[in-house]
Amino acid sequence: MTNPVAVEKGILDANGRAAAELRERLRGGRVYMLNLMSGAGAGKTSLLVRTLSRLRGRWRVGAVAGDLETRRDEERLRAAGVPVTQINTHGACHLEADAVAAALEEIRWRDLDAVVVENVGNLVCPAEFDIGETDRAMLLSVAEGHDKPAKYPLMFSESRALVLNKIDLLPHTDFDEAAALRDVRALNPAIEVFRTSVRTGEGVERWCGWVDGRIRAAKA
Amino acid sequence: MTNPVAVEKGILDANGRAAAELRERLRGGRVYMLNLMSGAGAGKTSLLVRTLSRLRGRWRVGAVAGDLETRRDEERLRAAGVPVTQINTHGACHLEADAVAAALEEIRWRDLDAVVVENVGNLVCPAEFDIGETDRAMLLSVAEGHDKPAKYPLMFSESRALVLNKIDLLPHTDFDEAAALRDVRALNPAIEVFRTSVRTGEGVERWCGWVDGRIRAAKA
Image 1 (tube, each protein chain N blue to C red):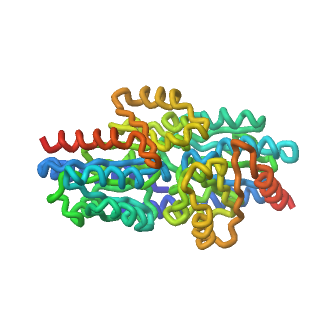
Image 2 (cartoon, rainbow over the protein chains, first blue to last red; image 1 turned 90 degrees about the vertical axis):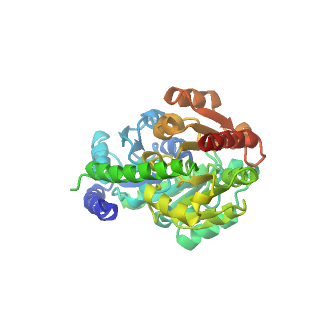
Image 3 (tube, each protein chain N blue to C red; image 1 turned 180 degrees about the vertical axis):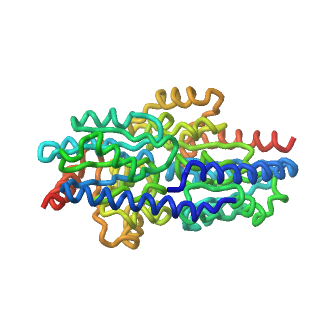
């Protein structure tokens, strides 16, 4: 049988090189790229529509949506009125740097200040693949359960910011926020945590302020 | 660069052979195996504790929990009072047949009537890997959103039963149940659908009745 570990290592190395090249090109152009990750259904697309709508008055922003098969995320993101394109992975559970680089050409990244890439919805694979981003951020919905940081540690370890979303559902779930945050901080003491409900709008402004600051830092 | 598609094909073929062998052994022993799949946080472990507790009066049942790193699911499943073991995939997003076959030896499958395997939580990869199961079933939590069948079609296409879970959250979400079920039935007209809230217990009995019937069919 083929050794999947050795093979995966090979893929990661080639992807790592492509990611490093893309990161260098973005840095040269002073373009910020955020890799937004989460499990399926945590609210990435909804948060992104709100975030892009908020930022487009200040910055030239664009978006890339990763998905297995449909163009639904791209259609929803168009509502934000910014350049957007979709990558269909045709079954693959993550994005890689080559596909992201090609998508950035489609939305003419050199004319932008910032791009947000919505990764494929899944708590496992996206965290294993560098796509050349400036920062990684992730969402966890309170409906997913407070055991997720301990069970899926890599994404929490690798993210600069965590958005705890759907907090309007807290009274209706058994989510133990203190336990979740304890596990998150054990994995990643420096992580910035945002509490949001995209549905009610709570906390979204503070999150957008953080993204705004990160774009400003990349332009400096 | 290595061709990941060709390599994945090689892995799938080796896994497919291992799965076919395991399925044949289980059939010979008249042991039913259910492969339970879902995204992270849809409620697999909670449903499984309830299901195993309900079935153990009638059948000799066991469980295998797949997870990336922790043994938390195994610990929770022990509450059901049945033989259980855990497979840690150390980062891999799905279970494969060889690891399942080894886990079945640990729980002495030849002395059982049925085994439920809780796959790794993620809507993408588990559906791509045959583990030798008799049936596949999946959970979708209403908190994950009604667009998931269209966006992650493979798991819905391949499952014999769908458990729509956390229906107690329906009044607090924008989940469009009719739209979700329309997409599910377009992918898989024969799928059995169960509406449950493991939290309140609603619908769990009907689901357990279905599993009971499937075990009885495998023993006939």
